[in-house]
Amino acid sequence: MGRFYSISVAILAATGSFLFGYDSGVMTDVIDSPNFLRYFNTSQTSAIIGAINSTYSGGAVIGSLQGGLTMDRFGRKFTIQLGAVICVIGATLQAAAQNLSMILVGRILAGWAVGLMSMSVPVYQAEFAPPRSRGLIVGLSQQMIGIGFIVSTWIGYGSLHASAESQFQWRFPLAFQVVPALILVVGMGFLPESPRYLIEKERFSEAMQVLRKMHSDGSNDDWIETEYNGICRAIEAEKAIASPGWFPMFTVPQWRTRMLHGLAVQVFTQMTGINVISYYQTIMYRALGFTGSRNTLVAGLYNCVGPLANLIFLVFFLDRVGRRRPMLIGTIAISLALICEAVLNSQNPNGERIAYSIGGVFFLFAVSIAFSMSFGPCSWVYMAEVMPMQIRGKGNAFAVAVGNWGVSTLWNQVSPVALDRLQWRFYFVFVAWNLCVSFPVIFFFFRETKLKTLEEIDLLFDQVPGIISESDELGMEKDLGMSATIENIEIH
Image (cartoon, rainbow, N blue to C red; front, side, top):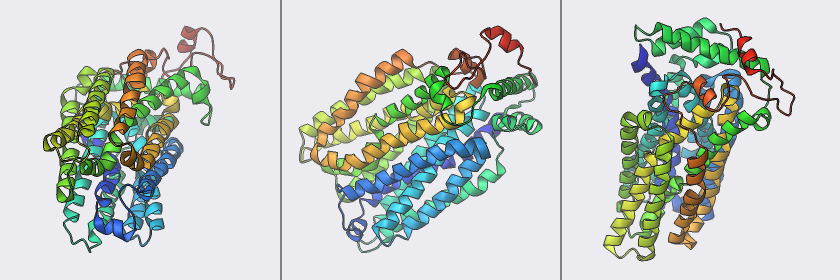
């Protein structure tokens, strides 16, 4: 079946990423619902709204960390399905909420579910993707996140046309989360497990069948055999030196370096400020003078431009230009757009200068486009690629939990208050980080991973596949003669 089947599997698995986008974006319109604000006796810039969004991100931290355990023990498929089941429960609580406690618990569960899926879907995709199209396949995660935002916004926009006295304004958008969650629960049952996980569990014939089904084009049997043997060699070597638990990825120098790369790219992604815009854009548009249905209409348009830019980038550029260069360019482009946004806002405090308001919307859209052609897809691809097999589950879990959701929790809580008090000055927090931290770290330390197998990336980081280069503090030992060690590894 080859490439078409691989992409089809990636798209269905990325329904988990769709839920990520939908669950993240749905509150944008929910908090713009007059009925919702009255029902819970709150306002858009209150600490309660910050708590609703931050509990979601806090739940995602828990889910991401748990995913590091369930992926290694029960597999990638099970972890994704578990997240979908938890999402159904969380969505039901939110849609049926009679008080703030039910909303908060529902958001925690939804975050927990998304945390599980946000770290397991890219790993699942990366482990069956061929090198020549891994950027496209893993990048589909970001594409589906964007589509989730689009759907959430337009469902929210339509729901807000209901009567101001109707709870349909916010209950229906929250209830819709159940639909993709159920599709994922059922659909994942028909998809294969990751071939790397199957080999790790010594299900060798099944792993070979999956590789052939994923990659065979009728003329590349030798390549598939080589790929299979390379994975077997790496995993066999891993089992000879691997130590259980989370501690080794902090103490083994090479593993720590690669885990920090994955963590850094997730932190840098959040520090672009993209999720602050995504969650609180209706507040920003109101400051620019856009109110009522015009506000949610602009939000709907904003959520469309990013996925379109992301799709163009995935199909035509990511596997050609790589990961590092787009992130460097994106850092500069996002910073310039935020500076222009702040300047226009500073000269238009009441949103009465129409040209400045339109310019403000333009530069927020520009941030979305720049992000979608840089950190959006590159962060998930790069993180999944740089983690070695020995710590891929736990390393991705830690990077997503701390770098993505931990930082997101902070901004979700403080942003409504910061936008109210600091207004346009708030943007310079992200500009300063991008220019003073993200750009120099990416420029000096990040390495290009395009068109390399996951085992070749081990060599890129001076690590022979499956082997650590020196003893760590726990007493992991190996021969000092690296070549002798390699020769003693039996290849399946």
